[in-house]
Image 1 (cartoon, helix red, strand yellow):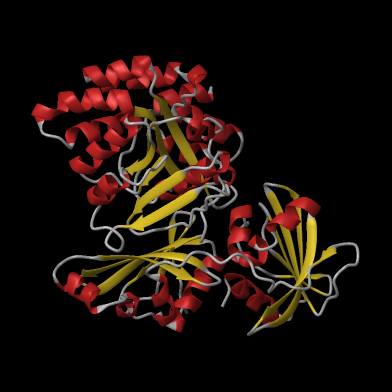
Image 2 (cartoon, rainbow, N blue to C red):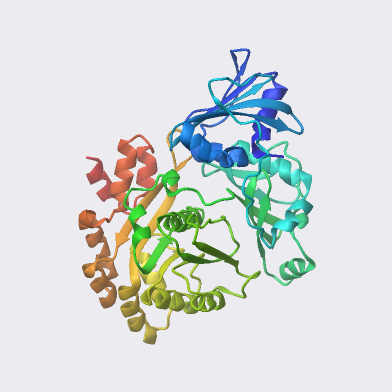
Amino acid sequence: MKAIDSVLRLLVEQGGTELRLASGSQPRMFCDGAPLPLTMPPTSTERIRFLLDDLWSSHAETLEKTGRIALPYRSAQLGDFAVRLVQPDAATLEVTFRREAELSDTEVEIRTPSAAPVAAPERRDTSAAGALPEALHALLALALARGASDIHLTPGQAPIARIDGELVGLDGAAAVEVDALLASPAQRERIAAGGSVDRGVDLPGLGRLRVNVYASDAGLCAALRLLRREAPPLAELNLPAQVAPLVELPHGLVIVCGPTGSGKSTTLAALAQHAMRGRAQVLVTLEDPIEYLIRPLQPAGLVRQREVGTHVRDFATGLRDALREDPDALLIGEMRDAETIGLALTAAETGHLVFASLHSRTAASAVERIVDTYPPERQRQIRVQLADALRAVIAQRLLPASDGGRVPAVELLRVTYAVANLIRDGRTAQIVNQLQAGGGEGMLVLERHLTDLVRAGRIRRDVALAAANDAATLMDYLK
């Protein structure tokens, strides 16, 4: 069942004849022109594309050229619909579903929606998706329709979803056996031995699912992250304009950091995908698990996505191998240990552009986190190496938006000559001063970005104050 079917089901159940989705607006439902009640949060362009899946992606090129198309859609469970897609600009999408409606002659009509969208490359773990219980597919469709980013499963309890950063119970959702999320006896043995299992699963019509299964005092539990199938365009993430130029760096290390759930993996994938637009190059990724599909985009470009535990033993082994695979760019899902960090720095020093994530709250603390990974006798050497290889640090977090959804707040450090000297000399506490003075060099202090978001009405003042590293600095900017 496609994700959009969960919304269309509401239309059918309430006897409606028309459903309208538009970027930044709440979905609306009508019966012969009369509005019907529908309680759903505003939908972003990214969410609409996610819900439509290949209904949009297989016609994206035509839509970009013409601005509007009309096509039929058949749901195996709900019947036939006439669909009109309108794209006034690259950031806006409007969709209308009509039951028993004819397509307008003034629109480009596409009568062959089955005329083969390009098939996505197969994943090692994708074959297990068909074995997942039907109750899980129904749960995911419901969660997607409500705009959830995560689902938590606990034995004997209703599923809990994270919607716009808040936990919400999904009462009435069918129970899902967590054991059914495991793909092999080896994974069950891993949990029995005190470990956990990470999987990435393709779900046709719904996108991708990142699964973490673990044991607790309540029994076997799971955390599910709902993802798009393909890496989102960088422009859709609402990141500040200073971020995009990072993909044009010839070499060096770019770190994306932030707390868990701050969108680090999404930003990394979007940066890598954006880099593949500019020129033909070889991108090698190391992920645990693979989350987004990244496409070459250039005829001679190559993308090699490798999953830790499936295609390669660990991050360090995969990174060591990758350096012999003629890469132009590398994406490292997480720098977890000293060996992986050391290899990433070596790759950045030897002419590769390296994107990596790190669990750290600020740009300055990211530097200290890397240095502290090593014993004291090696920290001086690592500071020198880091000062030479590091090009930028993006520290981000996701905040609840005023009109629903979430918006990223970003701190961006560019490693200038002065910043490199601070890193080399161990004076990382002074990096904040360089951030505040470095606006002309592409830097962005978190409090400045929070101020811009408040003034634009994107977030509330109290949300900004709670997220600021320095509330006094934020108040000065707001004045």
